[in-house]
Image 1: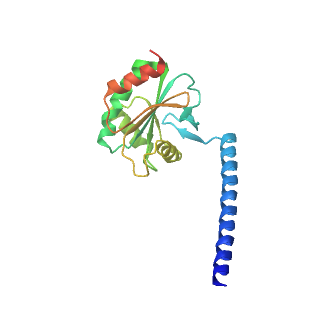
Image 2: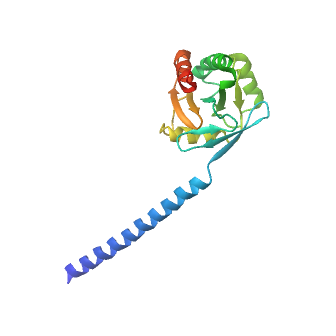
Image 3: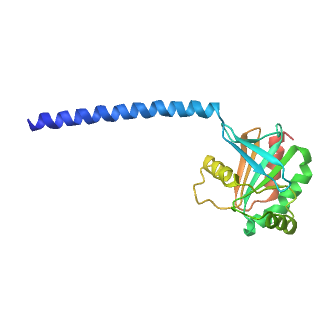
Length: 189
């Protein structure tokens, strides 16, 4: 009698769990289909008040209006010494590659006054697009998640994409020559 009761309980539990598992698979498939229909987009506001639309793609992120160009997202903070040291190198690369390269500095700091970002630009030579938007952190989280960097990631993080595909990522301070080499490769030069 006890064996029958245990067997019945196990059978019921197994059927219940299989049903939940099957339902979860169906929901997973629906979620995947929905993601294919509606892509994640982030609208960032630059210091120049221009809007920059970033779309999460299958293999990375793309910037609206940057087809055929290399796009670098520099994830930084104004208080970070390695981030400060990176700024003039990114400016030099932007100047060198002109219209073939877009550099977007995305601060991780919330509620940062634009003046503080302007001061950073002036003091550290960040002569490229800096964005200060409520969606900055959402984009940063999406990028770091796609790179599997975890929640407590170090900065700076520099991520290079071309046409929505990841070219290279750097965590921490990096030599300008390495970034230059990856830009050349992505542009086919």
